[in-house]
Length: 75
Image 1: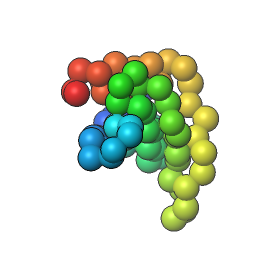
Image 2: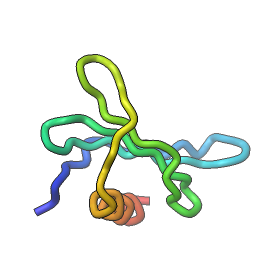
Image 3: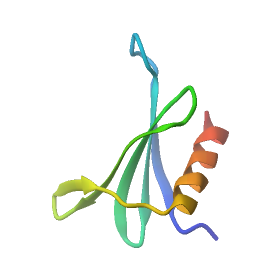
């Protein structure tokens, strides 16, 4: 069983220079967002949302790789 649940995925493909994919998910009862470059799935940023604000997220390599694989399958 996965340690997270993907709740939404947004593909921003209308930019002139780069295209991005943002995956929203829950993990340990918190909401997270991770944005990748669409071309090579390089991480752009990760956020955790708590108490009405957002903070840079510290995610394990295992979770990031698992989400990257999910995103790869969906695009």
